[in-house]
Amino acid sequence: MQSRLSYVFAGIGIAVLLTAGCTPPGKPKPEITPAEVTDFSTLFSENCSGCHGVDGKYGAGRPLNDPLYLAVIPKDTLRNVIENGRKGTAMPAWARSQGGPLYPKQITALVDGIEQNWAKPVNLHGVAVPRYSAGNVPGDPAQGKKLFARDCFMCHGKGAPIGSVTDPAVLALASDQYLRTSILFGRPDFGMPSFRNLNLGRALTDQDVTDLVAYLSSMRPPNTKIAKQSEE
Ligand code: HEC
Ligand code: HEC
Image 1 (tube, rainbow, N blue to C red):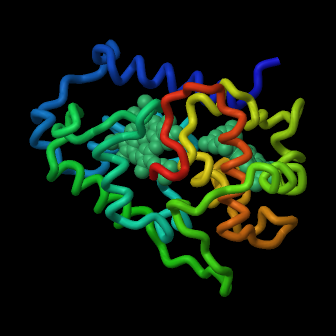
Image 2 (image 1 turned 120 degrees about the vertical axis):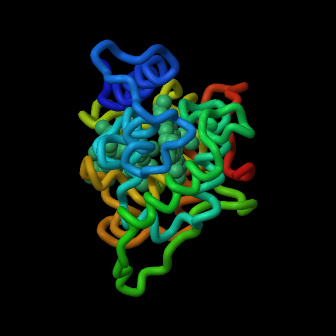
């Protein structure tokens, strides 16, 4: 049986074809030239919602309409990912300087629009917040394996209805940062909890998250050209 997560990544593949291909039949021609568009909703729905969901949630790709995520990701990192995309994944580069379609003012409109529309104050109840990226801190795959059995297996183990995240085919398409982002912020739209309660109802530490990513990353097929933890 195919897992829900294989569909997630197949869905992203279809979205790539749609965004790379011609305008779907019946879609009216835009009245203003793309370079002039600086309206956030238009930019987001034309370029991003196919993967990240209408209104930034319930898409195949992760929700961006997520106050916890936006409280932790540094604004320049958010801009950087949009400009450059993620090597080896379905996330393309959007900046013209990187071969994408958008001008700097349009990227600015997206970054500002995401923050203005979807960021909200988050009460962390004194929990220590792990960093967005692991940097050069090494992860321990053996420890990550133990944590996976304790904190993830009930939802993502073999045969679980949600889908295995240890499947090499899934890991071949997901960067280390994407795994880290998923563990940190969960999928609020589909019911995966965030780091705040993934440790049997308590919070995962920064090192726990790094170890979990090291474990998942160790099961990626060799020679996959995808960004590793230390490269973010
Ligand atoms: C074809 C599908 C697709 C489209 C279109 C797309 N994305 Fe993505 N995006 C992805 C995938 C897949 C990832 C995760 C990549 C990885 O493995 O790191 C991602 C990652 C991201 C991330 C980083 C998530 C993290 O790990 O913190 C941001 C931010 C983002 N996209 C913003 C956008 C914006 C803004 C647009 C529109 C300009 C856009 N994306 C369009 C597929 C897409
Ligand atoms: C209560 C169930 C639950 C637990 C516990 C859980 N997850 Fe998830 N996870 C989900 C759901 C639901 C999704 C969304 C699947 C989908 O998109 O259809 C998801 C998605 C993911 C994804 C893919 C992200 C995406 O955008 O689809 C990764 C990677 C992931 N989980 C890793 C983990 C890891 C590692 C742990 C343990 C630290 C964990 N999860 C614990 C339910 C859970």
